[in-house]
Length: 294
Image (tube, rainbow, N blue to C red; front, top):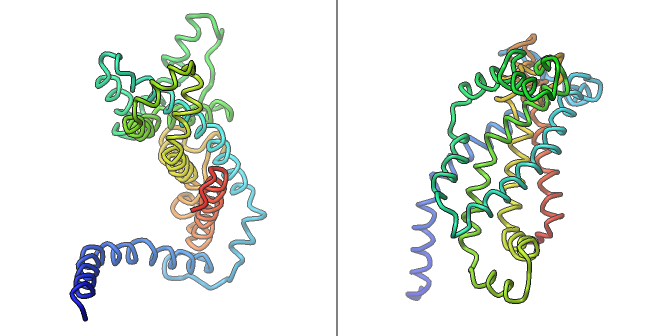
C-alpha cells in the first residue's frame, strides 16, 4: 500500500474513532427506543401485561374523537403560530441588525430571554395575567375595549389564543438568533449596490434578505413545525388542555393515555407514531416547497 493510501486509511480510522461514540449513543438512545415504541404500538395494556393486537391500535385512531380533536388543535397551533413566529423573528432580526441602532445588545438579550425562562414560572404568570381579574382584563376594561371580563381559560377560542401567544412569546427570540447570525454573514456591499440601483428597503428584504436566508428559514420552519407538533408543556401548565379538550394537543393526549386515564401504553405509542408521520410528511413538503433538491 502506498503512502497516500495509508494516510487516507489512518485519517478514516481517526475520524471513526471520534464519531463512533456518538453513533453508538444515537443507536441506543434514539433508534432503539423508536423501534421499541413501534413494537409497543402493536400491543395493548399496561406494565408487563401487554398483549399483541396487531394494527388494531392504529385502526382505533380513525374512530377516536378525542384523538381527532387533539390533531385539529395541534394543526391549528401549527398553521397559525409558526408563520407568525417566523415572520416576527425575521422582522425583529432585520431591525436589530441595523448598524445605527443603539443598545442592540440589550434588545437582543431581552428578546432571547424568554427562551431560557422557567416554563413553570412563565406559565404561572400567564395564568395570572389572563385570569378573570387579571391584568389583561383590567387593562382592556380600562381602555373600554370590553365591558365585562373575558373568560380566557373557559372559552375554547381564547384558550387556544393564550397558548399561541405564550409559545410565540417564548420561541420567537430563539429563531431570531439564527436569522441574526445569517444576516451578519451577508456582505453589506450587496445592500449598498441595491441602494445605488434604487431598490427600496422592502425590495431589499424580499429580493436579497429572504433569498440569502432561505436555508436558515427552512431550518427554523422545520424545527418550529416539529416543536409545535410535539407541543405539551404550555398546554399542560396553562390551560390543562381545557376547557373540555378544546386546547389539548397530541402530546398531551399521549400523556393522558399513559398516566391519567386507564394506562394503555400500546395505544399511546400508536398515537405517538402519528406525530412521527406528520413531522416526516410536513418536513418533506417544506423541503419541496423550498426547492431543496439535494
